[in-house]
Amino acid sequence: MSDLLIGGAEAPALGALASPVTVIEAGTTCRDVDELFRADEHLGCLAVHGGAPHRRLGLVSRARFQHLMSGRLGYGRLLNARRPVSELTDWSPLVVHADTGVAEVARQVLDRSWSQRFSEVLVRDPGAPLRQVSVTDVFRALSGELANKALTDALTGLANREHFMQRLEQCCAEPDVQHRLALVYVDLDGFKALNDGHGHGVGDQVLQVVADRLRGCFRSDDLVARLGGDEFAAIAQLPAGVPVAPAARHLGERVRACLSGTISLGPLVLPGRASIGMAVAGSVLADGEVLLREADSAMYRAKAVGGGRVELITSVGTTAPQENFTPDRRELQRAVDGGEFLVHYQPIVEASTGRLASVEALVRWQHPRRGLLAPGAFLEAVTDAGFAANLDLHVLEVALAQFSRWRHGLGRAAPRAVNVNVSVQGLLHPGLAPTVLDALSRAGLDPAVLRVELPEAATTAQLDVAGGALETLRDAGVRLTLDDLGAGASTLHHLTGLTLDGVKIDRRFVAGLLDDERDAAVVAMLLELAHTTGIAVTAEGVENRSQLEALQRMARGRPTFVQGYLISRPVAAEQLALPWSDGLHHLHPQVPAPRSAAPAAPGPLASR
Image (cartoon, rainbow, N blue to C red; front, side, top):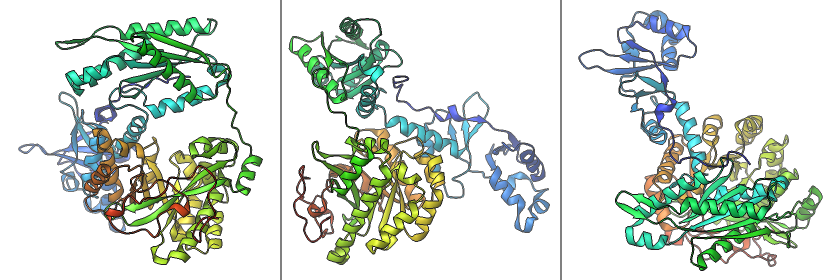
């Protein structure tokens, strides 16, 4: 494990990205400006000082200036050489203070006219020379901020629960780590009474103090997280050469002592006290959920005897190892041939009307021993076995066949399109385009009904490799959608490098839309970015009407789509409420819960 401790939640201000800018006078000739750009190929722009009495500040961007100097038929330099640069200057550049946040600058960039949107941003800092930042750097920094936001708790800056569980499972899968792996579970004593007595503002300050103290308790290569409320957890590796139980007990007592000091908030002095549960992995542990559950149980034992103490459970998993789930290609192919991989469907509807626009095809595994498995339980194993592209094709064929049955059975009442995900392995498969187009042909469907969802995990290099195949599909009429926008550091770069028809805003930002100002700002910015670039935008993970209403307000009447449990859970084809009725009063169709056993005999419109 390395570099697991998440830092602060605050993103850097724009000043951290800025570089010096050359300032010239408004009377400088265009010939002289042209020579400045020719002399330095890295010079992206020049600031222009207008002089007294108005002290105007302008900007000359390299690309626009050279375009004007080239002119029609190449005579621009001859015609403009003696003109003062003031006549080609943008006298209303975007000028921001160095302390302005990256997200706010991105919003201001998007609010500008199309002709000004790609100009550099000028950065002022009292007492310092004028500086500049390119729009590309603004959005690159925003990509990093969004990626960090997806992994961190907004209040404390620690890792969030999702990141914590991902790292825990990774650690449990490493043989040289898991046998000395300790999970520390912390719950603050008396926090509810403190919140009720002093208010949530004071409660939040206490949580931030506790987070800072926990950072100091652990090594830089341990992971500390806030799981929710006043519950914290940490993953730590115990030192080698020391008996496990004493080492774990020593760590727990160190954490307890670290949190036991009083907390001073101005005139308010509060006691620091926590119940701590610890669980240490056994030699054959394979499930992080088990380790977390045991640590949670130990914490409750500590709380039950009065709190302010440490309870320890060792050798978790030694007596009851779980089956190692590592299917090979032959087992996966047998599962496909035996109909074990099922396809469920989740509606995507227009936010303003509730009309059905598309359905997303989502794979499930009806495993003969493990029951119905969600994708998170098996997709990593499928990828490790090199079977992801095969599974992509299976889901595509099943979804297109089902869509064809809906079309023939329901006519105009059928969904207008179907969304199918492609994995990174599928994206890189050399036969991607002909395979997809052949599947559409065999299903008797126009390519325009298919929305291929590109994975957020794909790197720019991988998308470059797949660029030819994606262009072939798009030329044939298939629509391309970028999944989970904002979830990773590279997704905003994909918007400029790909020709897209749609994007989907990651559910993590929608989940915090009502309670987290940063999440709300990110969603508003991503909606604006999608709308201004003319591509369809879908918000994932919409679970309640308040989220839907907030998205409707942000969309301001522009075409926006939503998907999530408020609309419908992913369900089998025969459970989907079709034909879908128009209108917002039908946004939550009453459908049965997904079955955990094998589905009943299909009806006339069901998947076979």
